[in-house]
Length: 231
Image (cartoon, rainbow, N blue to C red; front, side, top):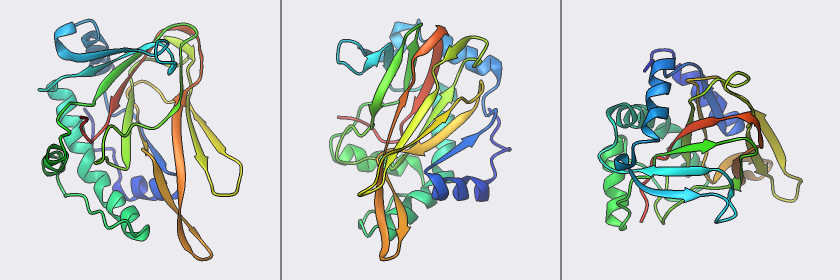
């Protein structure tokens, strides 16, 4: 895991400007392959979801159980303090009255106090034709305004298509879409539900959703890092 390449100022600027930031080559190819290999180890997971069954798309994902594998636990704990200042700034300018703790362990205590005790990191698998409809990952009353996805396969080599899609809905305007195709080991940090946008009368909320376009060929895996727990 390579966190030394993360430049906090650039990360903060990107999140504030567009609601997302791409961190390149955070996991090595071997680390990515190790995470993909976990998918076929049932004991690691607490729940499996068929997207087609729930009309979420076409594919499958599995929620990991506690204790998380060391690599995933370390990544979750390492990313949180780098982005919590952005989260707190957003909550402040939007006058929500919410303040997030400086470290992730304390934030999970806030989740537990509201009955949210289930692990939310997940591994997603898409085959040919697989896709994910636009959605938000909330899971309870307590949630963190940013989350991350790690791209585990080589775009254009292991699979084609399957682009990551972000949409934002500005009040009284049409939706805007951003389409991204990160490389293996890249980490995308993005808005969970809404972010602030400054207007002529102060800040207002811009709602955001995310999804995955259809995979044209091959198999695509990603690791979702959600910082809050679920009920």
